[in-house]
Length: 239
Ligand SMILES: O=C(O)CCC(=O)C(=O)O
Image 1 (cartoon, helix red, strand yellow):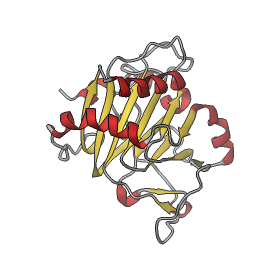
Image 2 (cartoon, rainbow, N blue to C red):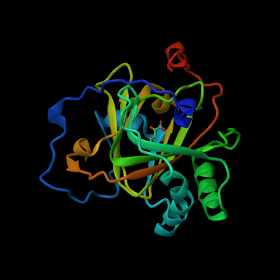
Image 3 (tube, rainbow, N blue to C red):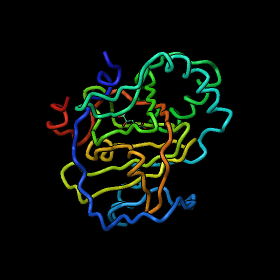
């Protein structure tokens, strides 16, 4: 059975954007490091500021190597999956890992201590998602049955763009630039009420600038579901 489906059942939701908002510049342009989140309005970016974070350079090249050294042998045994038209992910392989070597455990402990409240129990297995260069993740909300208020992910091997769109108001959106080696954190309303997706290479544009998407591996930590202030029944039925 697919690990991912157990951890995070997904919905498909077409994100609606006004095309004029995002003009692509003629070629890749270096982006300023301090501009990692843009949105449909300044007010939205400010309002959700405490619920979405991108930390650049969270891991070093050496730490990325340590993670890849542990992950690649297992991933190489699997095939990328492309042909499930209704899957929320296209062109991927994945695994879960409970025990890690010391170097990787140290990295994950850093993620855990920064991303999650101290008293929040975490899902034991860490989820690892390997997206082929042509792979992408469609808009979805992780199932509230399987994961709690916070999702924290490391990006290895490639930059990418994560798009968040309000589930019931698609004119409200945020784009996150996720540089290779960065950590992103989605919490609370952003996690429950916004779909998230990773754009395919052809659409991988951040704030008007092309962000080439190569093969990308994400290492994702989640906490277990618990009480939350604004749980909606519709979330519970998604699977
Ligand atoms: O690859 C990522 O960082 C996002 C993964 C994701 O969307 C998910 O597992 O629900």
